[in-house]
Length: 266
Length: 328
Image (cartoon, rainbow over all chains, first blue to last red; front, top):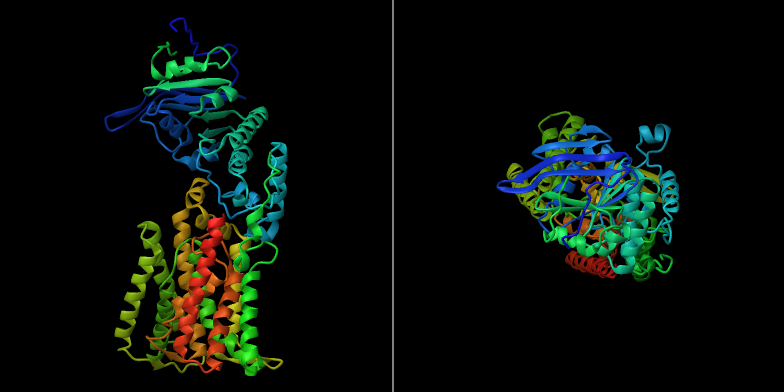
């Protein structure tokens, strides 16, 4: 295994959408992030992997605004940003999908897709009477699902009548519709079975193919290798390596994750 | 990959199903069944005079049930419905007795009721106290305070403005009061809020999955506060309707308002677990409670039996709710 040569940078650098430089975050004496560098490129799926406690979730929280780092810089499209909270990150075009199916089961698909961002009717009905434009939301939901080639029994179905994969599909589609810069998927398939996981992975790929870069956090190595363009490996609060699934095997990645193999992190 | 899943649960919940096409079809069937039984056992039941009385008897519980619906949709429960309404009648009545302007007295009473709801809402949403305990405490505090203020006794409220909602008009052989119209108007307004606006959509989402609501940026705490305050406002307006029904401010009134309003909401198909149901069902549910009490009175049965039957009804309705929940 000593012959392993991980290259933190892969050649032909496309535009960087989201970049983090030297991020530090401690909780009391525990250093969760010890100077992490991170970059997400246009049009890619970047998988983030690491053992429990490696700092994955803290890193993601700093990128989604849920945690404010002690020091370090975050750049979105080259511009420094300071997220005050998750809503702030959302307003800037970063959408997050969580593992625990963040949908309202008794509401239908369009209501879930537009939850928190409902469209109002034009004219006085919307501005004074705050009336929802249900038809337009329905039409746009139908269009979004068709664009993503995600098949559902009926757009008017309540989400509780869908399978787990379809429900998560609705959450992923919501991110795809509203994310202007990137989407972050935090263990999106952890609660799903094998077949349902397949549906969601297909959807994530469709999103990437439409040009939206995706950060995918996952414990599931086969999924990571199936989907990722690059794999960002964390260990002990730092970036251990960034590798390509084409040049490295799962065993290599696990070895870097656990520290069996050390890599020069750039 | 997805076409193989038929949407079975939609229509499978039996009487209490909430199908999209015809809301509240289950409650309507229950209402018709009760009407049929009472109509067969007593011919006076269907007389326009009696039907008018049922509508008038439904006003207070029916209007309180609007606020109760809002609270239950957030997966809460309001045990202070009756107490807050009685607060309104006593404050308005007392102020008018003391010589204050009736309109201002009523407005002040409605304001106090809204404030009561607001305080309960603040305790629920900011301190995360269980709604059950907050409203049970409110019930105890208000009941005791009102008895102290009124020295335990009821007093008549003879004022044209406070009794305004009791004024009648005829529609054919039916006699309706302004109160009936006011109740239906309130139903229409709150129905619109619930079904046609963001505010209502967010209310359902919060009742359904508060975590998801928070994650999409809905201000969950603020929304809960608004719900309890609006419910308090509705209970205050109900006080005006109650004074139109019976021109009497009684600290011991509306003892069964909790049972009746919760029964109306639940039998109307709104889930105690939050996020499901609506006002059309609640109106039907309130009519069911009204029909039941009226029918049993006509049959000359001891009023205590009415409470007993209502108690059974609410448990049966909740059991249906629980069973349909398991199927989901």
